[in-house]
Length: 155
Image 1 (spheres, one colour):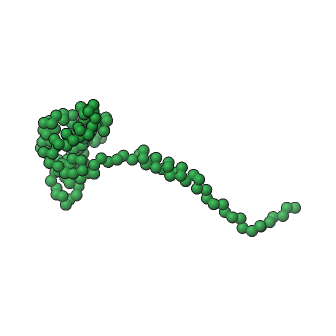
Image 2 (cartoon, rainbow, N blue to C red; image 1 turned 120 degrees about the horizontal axis):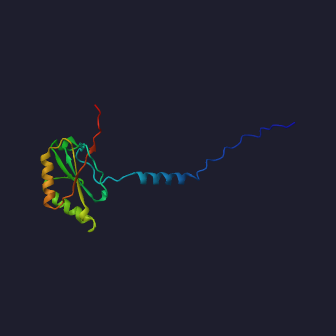
Image 3 (cartoon, rainbow, N blue to C red; image 1 turned 90 degrees about the vertical axis):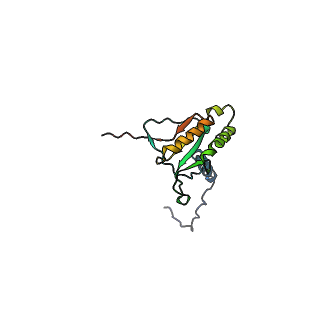
């Protein structure tokens, strides 16, 4: 007959950390792939309007954004402001913005540069018309408007 022995306490083996670097690199790659870098911090509130027909922009690297809306910080006022890159601007600053955006792109891609106006739905059309007029004067004829596709409601 066998004899069972209780030969003292068995030691618990140490947790293997050999796979820890693999897990860390896998998480780093996951966040690098899924994260998009924001080009400009929003200083204005832009709840874009709804549209019945929406087309997705291709080659977003060739898009320059003009943000229009009330400041997101109430201390800066409630009137509609224009944001170019990371600062507030006036309509007269738009030509310099367009020229600098063109200079930042390759010469081959400059003719494909699109200016996207991302405006809040409460913005009056007058300021949008003024922006369009400035863009027309500097030869930026390719303009798009940011919008959300309207969800069809059945009645």
